[in-house]
Image (cartoon, rainbow over all chains, first blue to last red; front, side):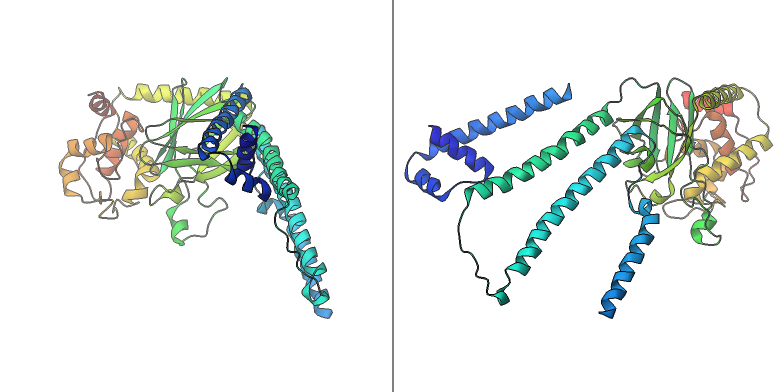
Length: 57
Length: 371
């Protein structure tokens, strides 16, 4: 689970080591990465909204 | 070697020459706190870009020179370097956030038009600006005053060619003024660089903006959204006055407006109306219908010797008051007051050989508008 989150975060940043990429593609289910990706993206958007609301006060 | 020195001389001379005109090349600092903030942001971001440029191109040129092929350099052939990749992702993010924070603070301030002491409605029209001091019963249109002869080249251009108007927008210094901006016809944009205001005026929408001017003076700008054939001929001029002076001006204008309102009920002599009408015609109508009423068909019909106009006063009044839908002719019912409409119609009916002898009284116009 934690390794999936780390891989998704790395993908958001756009930086990932080759070794890690090989691991991701050889183990784990695609659905896990997709769902984690959507959740983290939503969290990111939420964070921006909170930040903007805070700044607008 | 000699030519190298010559180049150095040329570069030094042009650099010292440019120093005197640095402000001509840059955006103005302006006369409001917001414009100074914007200028500061602009310069900060400019210097950030300069530093990035120097570092990136410096590293690039150094590498090109130091590791050149003729010195036997061999290309390194490695793939992926996570820490460097993280570094060159993180640095731009930090730079962008560093620029976004002050920029957002300035934007936030620019959009905060609350607590204004004076509200001015700015309406764009093809091709003039209308200013209305809300709650003060003062309103007027501001037309370009550069003569057409200067545009055609028959006369030499004046100092403020295309940037001068018959009546500037008058504002007080040190007071927060809120602008409510809209348009009667197409999208215009009201732009005065020294005030750091550049706002689209859109039909059916009201945009807000505000200024607090710090220094008295005359500030010039232009319409900056292509709005038709005379887009280049609807400049903006703002006359910023000391507060006392502004209060005096506003009181004077209020009185004049009240007097004009009284004038609707009295009987006007033909000469009075014609004289007044001629002024209005030249500032408002002549940009389309031309100075001698010859028009420029087919877009702008001639008024001189126009059979329909000569034979039918009611038709003529209707066109001026209600405009022509689907054509460039605007409705002047709210732009001009009854005295002005009566004057300009009387003038047009008695100028350039249209010798109808008709006199239209302001009271008749007021009645037509009320209908």
